[in-house]
Image (cartoon, rainbow, N blue to C red):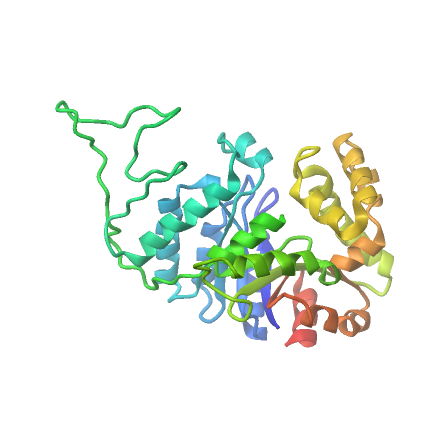
Length: 353
């Protein structure tokens, strides 16, 4: 079991202790450091900043939102980060959800699986650098081509297209730069197993992973799959709250669960809600969502059952957390991405490293 430090995205401003946590994680033997983005801070800039002060830990995004950048822009950033870090970069990305894609980026959320397949195929071309990048896709045609619902491409006075297929100027440090996918639904998990090098589950609970195993197996069995179960990485974010009082520890995790189950998505279109419902907490998820969407956030937080928190987090006294180590080491996870203060990351290192 490897450990990663999850720094997430900023709230109103940056965490003043983030760099100290990164340096401590590297000292403790953590394998990786991860940054994220939602609709505030971006994932790449802080990661480059932290990477400049480290020498060993891998540097990953969990996740970059696909709608924020074109496939080649993301590939350019990945190549740049990989060079600057000496081959330590992991490109983690995902489709996000319609609330952010359409509400923040002003793009359509339609056909997320098809868009993801095209996105990764284009980036693999950039990383391979075997010729100019050309892709005849429905969502990301390169060079640009007109089509249904699209304006015609620019042309010169003779009607010749001005768009030109280009080969990246920079030679990528690694043609096989690893790509991890964030995925929650079975179809997207299977796609990750087929075309990616790793997968980020979310609101992950080791005792409720059978349908993930089935989805991964389906993806690995597809023709041309890049990996198998032995070579595929699963980087699972897990919250830790250390307190002699289990309920007090759970109270520190409940707001996070309530936010994602209740507020990060619309009624009827919330992937995080679906994860919790599949775990057997559908009635509780409906109550949390109803309260949250009604503006009753405190009540929604209180409605998160301790049993649900314990299923997907490490909470309570350090001794209790240590006793539960095996449920995580026996799981699909190859890396646990932990977050919190220095006490949290040291406790996790004592238990797992």
